[in-house]
Structures are given as C-alpha cells and as structure tokens.
Image (cartoon, rainbow, N blue to C red; front, side, top):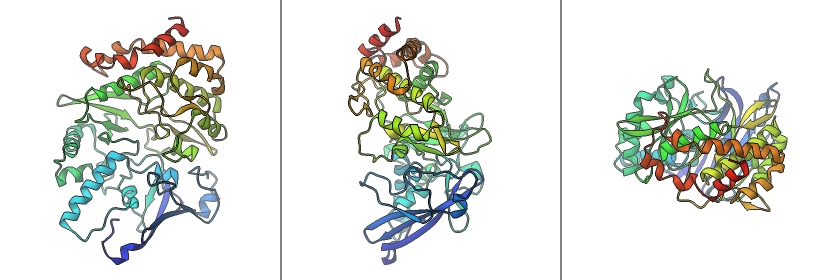
Length: 435
C-alpha cells in the first residue's frame, strides 16, 4: 500500500472494497484521492447492499443512497475517512509503531514515499480491526491479513514478547524485528499507552494493555480495579483480569465487538453517532438526543449512560470523551450502548468531566448537578438514588477488590489512588445513599 516517492505519487487514486462481518458481505467502495496537496476520500454504497434484506447505514455521516459521497475533514485532527471507518483507524500507539516501522524501511529503501492516512488505515490487522468493517483490495485480499489466519493476533503465551517489544519502542531502542512483530497488532480504542490485540486463555479476542515507562502509579492494575468495581455497581463492562509477565502487570480486557464464534459486531463511537469533530466540546444530553432515534432500547441505554457518569465522577475518571463511548449494532437499523471501556481512576486530576453533562450545566463537577439532570436520562428521583446507593456500596469495597487475585494491588499501590476514591463528592454520594 505504501507509495513510491516520484511525480506520480502527487496524483494518486486508490480504490478498496469495504466489506462487513465474518462473511465479508460487500458494502461499498472506498476511494482515496490525492491531487498534489489536495487529499480527500469518497465512499459509495453498492446497490446490492442498499437492496440487501439486512441493510443498514454503517456510518451516521453517510446517506443510505447510491452515488459517491465525499469526505473532507473539518480540521487536521479529524479523520480523512467517513466516521465509522475512522473508528477503525489505529490509535496513537498504533500509529507510532507503524510510523517507526516505515521509517526503518525507508532507511533501506529511500524510494519509499511518506505514509498516507490510507496506509495507516490499511495497516491494522484485519482479524482484530475494531467492529465489523473490513477493507479488501482488488485482488480480494483483506488488509492487513496474515496468511495463516490468527497468527497475526498472538495468544497469551506471547505476552512476554509483546511487552518486551513495546517497551523497546517506548525507549526508542526498538529493532526492525520488534516493529515487524508489533505492526498490525495496534488497536482503534484510543490513547498513546502501549497495547496490543491478543487472544486470551479462552481463545477470545482481547486487548493487552501494558505499563508505560512513564507511569508513576500502577495504572494497569488500577484500570482492572475500576472495571471490577463498575461491574459491582451495575455497569455493563467487559471481562478483565491482570496477567503478570516477568513481574510486570498487564491488563487483559476481552473485546466486546466479537461473538464466541468470532462473528464481528458493527461498532461506532459516540463521536460517530454525534457526527462530532474531535476538537469540539459536546454534552451527554446531545448524545441522548442522537440516541433517541438510533437505539433499540433507548430508556435502558439512557439510564445506563447516567449510571456511567455517576461512576466516572465518583472514581475520578475524567477522560470521558466521545471516542471513549461506543455503540454496537442490534439489527433493524438500531444500536445499543456498548460495554464501558477505558475507565481509569485519576488521583492527580480535577474532578471535572471532559464531556459536559448538558449544554446549560457544563462539565460534571458535583453530585447535586448529576441528580439535577437525572430526569433527562429517563430516571425518577427514587431510581437515581437507588443507582447512587449501589455505586457507593460497590466503591466502598475498592481496597478489598484491589487486593483480590484478579487485580493484585499492594497496600502501597492502593494508597496512591486514595484521592480518586475518597473525596468530598463520594462523601456527598454516601450521604445521599444513607450509608
């Protein structure tokens, strides 16, 4: 896919088929166009897909109509691709690995051109690409795929090798072998932290999240702690545990966009549902408005969304941007809120949400503010109090859960997270709950 550095590169056009699911049902055509400095993409649905009995609009910013539609990003930070495809792009860590690998290849072959956004999109391993959208070239080959099927997504026993290679990249000491091993295993789930796709001990697709050399606290164990507490608090989350590799904790979190038989579930982020630019500020009430027409069980999802806001506030998870919210396809052109992910207690952060509660109230900063908006999320005062009570009961166990075998934190490690769990807002929630 990487182009050669000559005059022809300045005017290129690449076409790829966009397919859906394990069976690879053809959906449409993706076109990447570069005319000198002008770069844009187009997408056109296949008529067969529009006529398909199970057809649905794969991206909120696409019209379900024949003919090519053009995408020009609003800012340099926004995706060049229609948003559901943009949700499958490698995250910052994945891009870092891809760029480093390409730089080493250019040292050996100076004729290689610079990477394009299409190169990054196509470098994600097909087996582990987020959601159900897949890319296929003119030869019928899925991008990027390994000849031996699952070989590109390693099993748990290779965690040591992945950790070693990831650490080398962070330290700037990676070899070509490290980069070749990591390339394609990046994810679309966001962030600069080192991570890889992996098959867990039961053979399910999972995410392995490694400690960073810059960490000052045990962030990987704390994320698993947060997921365990969220489950106790009645929030839908993925199965997670800590695996220890040569004394280093790795968070292993099962992917929620696959079924037990490896079928792929279509996925879009909250930003895609809202058709939001990555630089814009938005509110949960705006998400609610979009959910009313999109979600199969709107009331259930609206209540779950409020439940997550309360939990995030009480454990000081303030990185609640729209890319950290997702939706899974239910059928009949309807979606549902995906399990919660990227939940991290942040003891050194101000307790202020990144996504506003409403356009009138601003960021989430207090329990009275959350309680005052509960009715907008289809909750009575009594229902909201019941949710708060269950969350307080769960979070009160944070030290005990942190020391459980699946998390494995020491007392000293837990002490470093006290400001995230024990604070004035939690005291206010406890008072509300009568506990």
